[in-house]
Picture 1 (cartoon, protein in one colour):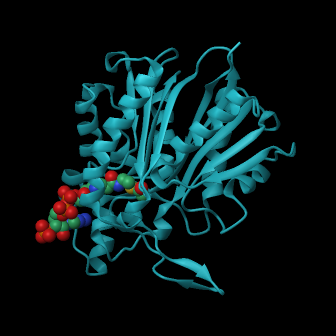
Picture 2 (picture 1 turned 120 degrees about the horizontal axis):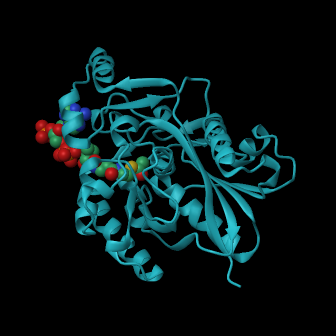
Length: 326
Ligand code: ACO
């Protein structure tokens, strides 16, 4: 009998400090950087984001989200036999944030734990890898997390990027099942676009070499994102043998409301079928898809048996999608 993986529970966590556009604009004005709530809302759909306290790391946010997902799945931490954390803002250069999370969860069963680095597509990549490992029989209960403290890598003198991002974590517990589950996935990267969206600095000989803050050519990313998101959605639907009309919910990467609605239009999905959390979360990179999924599940919007299309796009350039029967 074919083995599938199923999402058994979801979780999400935002650090308590909510920063409205007005508050951020006032803070930036003190640095001589001009922006406004009107500009940010009109161009992105973002009204606020959450920033973690300076002593809070990605693994701390991940811990809250993971505990919620484990509770929702009715799974004890020691039943987990695989942990994958998608993050571009890990606690340390090494070891992985997944290994740190394993310890914080008190898991002592020696399960595999590693990070996935695919920037804003990270959670899509991580979930596809976990699904493949469950299908192959190398895991039965996987914890898959997206967690970010992007506030640490923002250049607050660059108004074209610093207003866009926030901190947070989302998680799912993925379990082996005789019925689907994850129906299909599709992952891509195109390394020729590395410079479009990157944090170019690195650690060398005890110093940071190069710029350790986020750089983005927003317009170029925008144009590429819309095209690849449509393509990957169609590829995943074709693999699953599911039509656009059979998609109940689109849970896209929460970067910009205009990208999300444009993707939905190209897939002939009405805006009511799009889960939107960017207004209150901003772009939380690898955390954005699992956070949005968790919000919609907890609100009772996404129901068991429904077809949910998850999509991500980000630095690399990377992109991908997954179709999930909840
Ligand atoms: N406040 C006020 N004005 C601003 C701001 C700001 N925060 N930022 C830019 N502007 C100005 C610009 O300087 C420009 O002024 P000018 O016309 O005088 O030169 C004007 O607004 C228009 O700027 P554009 O860059 O053309 O604005 P655009 O409509 O393209 O929106 C944005 C910019 C929001 C960044 C958009 O391009 C976007 O969302 N891009 C995609 C980002 C994305 O999807 N990332 C996903 C991956 S993220 C990851 O992987 C980490």
